[in-house]
Image (cartoon, rainbow, N blue to C red; front, side, top):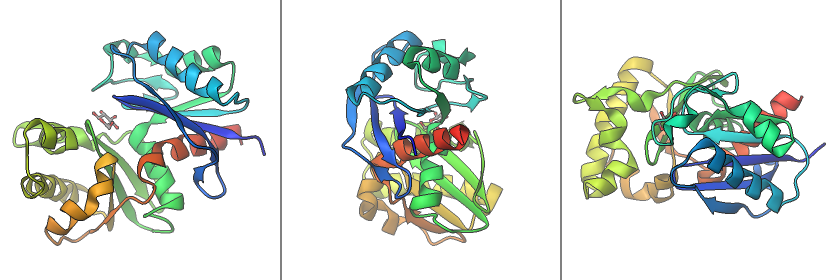
Length: 248
Ligand code: BGC
């Protein structure tokens, strides 16, 4: 089968690699460039082209985006340049790369990877994957099927956008200890649990690397709470999975 390439577009870095879809792992070491500041569409597209060309890749490309994506159009941009709002991002990448391109929300991509190859593998019922980073991303699954663009990081918590209080960026910004931050995460999980009653919550994002520092501090709850398994590669793997589905 043709090689499929995944690109993860984040607030700080744009990273990509060809993906071994059978095993859900990177087929080669990933290549990363810094996200241009400001992260205007043309600048990001040029950076993505550099990442894809680094591998001389020919074939479908899947790309994550940290906002709502419907039919290839980016609809929101909480922590990237507002120029993305309303853009036909898929068309833009397709043209710039001259390759088939598929764009999806970053947390949805991470969720797809975790549900197939990671901590949510084979888990039926309602499963929620939450990524803690600059914001809070969410991917909701029902018997393995994704409900895209759930945006649960923007639920209201104590009168604020939840990700302003409980993301890992909020931990850094406010100099919170692990215990203090875990308290905020607990409050947030109470809210999502009240609304969705998931059987399993998978905690992803960069901070999941340090899960032993905060998962044991969380309260016991109805849902089982586990760390993501694919960590940093989940976005790239999930993006490639989405592109492969489209390519058929
Ligand atoms: C965005 C989401 C994104 C999450 C993680 C939120 O601010 O609205 O679309 O998944 O950050 O990057």
